[in-house]
Length: 248
Length: 331
Image 1 (spheres, each protein chain N blue to C red):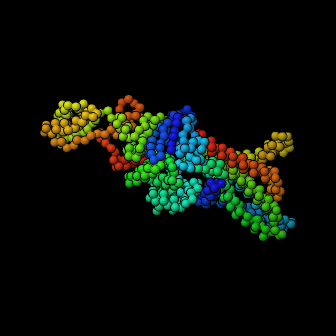
Image 2: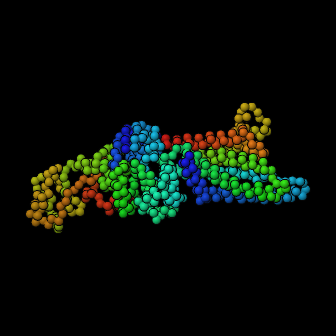
Image 3: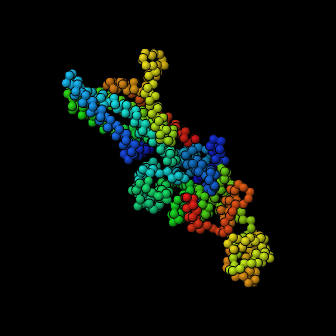
């Protein structure tokens, strides 16, 4: 436990001196800011004609897309950089289990993303002040809870892939491909009329489907289980990959 | 403290080390000597729990390196060949991180102590990225000493250091080696000669010789050799020395001096001196030639049958020469 915290602390601190993290935060916040601004302008224009109030979903849905594309950049260096700079030798010869390294790395990234998500809370708060009678807080809590769970599992996938290669660009590309695959796995046919066991399995593997329930304000055990299992599975795989490095 | 039995490691089809067997006791400094790619680093990586062997076993401080890897890693201080440092951290933060991983209680104190030992206290708050190679080497050493390890494994510890630091690090290693076990690899032979209680010469994954530096010298000295130098014209000197009873052979040296050999235990230097002075030569120098570890090393690790070009002054290598070697290696 103590080692996990030691690794996580170092990882977290490193984000505040690393340009990658600032670039991600910049992209995240500037796009959200723009989407929020244009959404509000639109809502004000509409409100002349109908009774219309924007919901917190106007910030949640762009955030899902942003998360999918920026998380690979957050995790791409975490373990692969240790490998390419030779510090892996230091880590693997220190009295720390491989699993502690993987969980520590994941926790550091997760805490950084939580910080970034906390900053984005400024939009729901601003929205709450601008509309009457305020935003649906249940929707916001569910939306953010789902987002946090999704970030947790995608970061774990990123860490696992980062432990496979020592080249950060390779890690980024493979990670993006993996994320897109579990994002789009359901879209096997465009009419959406498929059925059968295969379809059911693919549908349940899909990442966004599980998020959609949170997005609509429903927290269900199935979806929570999905994200928690994905996180655990990816962390176990990451540990196996780190261990396999020793045998190469 | 270190026991190794039949240790073998294969990288695919290539056998990096081939059934190594050796041991190191507490309070012993053991030197690992060998050309590049001989398997020194591989052996050290197995001993530090970085990777498992393909066959054989090794125990460090009484614990198996595979089955009790964590226990081994707790007790070993390791300085890898490429000094592993986080360049985006300050020296202090880096050492604090390592101290935390090792669960040191008095981390601040120990960090100050090791930084003092390696003379880096004044750079504690600087970023590692801004340090020179020698300084990084010293931080790497500080990291290895942090938890007062029972066994210290150092892969080329003096590489990249300036002459003054080399002397310091060597005396530090000697001091540590009095109570604890040190295994170090080096390609600077004079360093092995000065530091090590025992030398293992390893070539192509196999131990080709194992002994104290002194005994290795004795083993390979087939004859006694001495260098003779006279002032002025040396014509006829070789012929004269050859007539002295007991002299087996003479060889002209490139710097104008003359080397002569006699059978072991038969010191002919006094007779040679008398003969040379008697013949009217101005004798300026007469000194014995010790076969150096360099010669032994070349002898044991050479591949071609013809002997390599050897230094004509096969004396003990001095600190200056060691420093030059280091500089050359750094280039």
